[in-house]
Length: 157
Image (cartoon, rainbow, N blue to C red; front, side, top):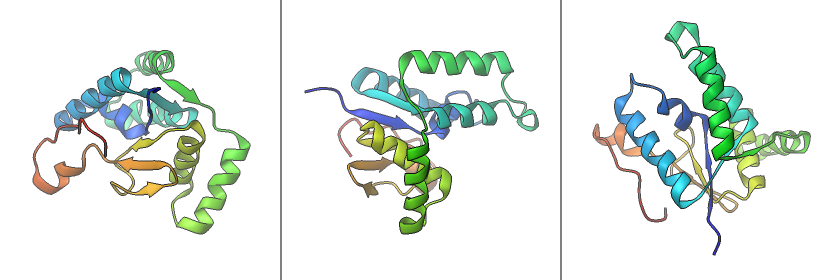
């Protein structure tokens, strides 16, 4: 059996570098390790663009541009990077009409589905939601409920 594909959203990558959120940083680091060891991690060009824009914001005393660029290059050597194409953009606009998701969330969903991902790791969508063959997993879900640091689940969703 081949490894399952896991699509990681921008927020997971951002938290890898966010020392101001140590609990989320630890969860993101654990998830990244698991994705690399147990699955095929999948990112998209959109995720990498959003990552760069978020982590280099001057207002947040962000990462130096060179550090963010190196992180993107490192991510792209380790993970599969799905290209955002015009047909995916069109599919995202159709999803907006039928689901009420934002354009950016719709584009993430469509790219994850097109890449064959079975899980979409994000804090931006409803945990446990199933969209086609894709299950949304919020690795940070119990932090908002309990105030405690959750562990990333080891078994399936």
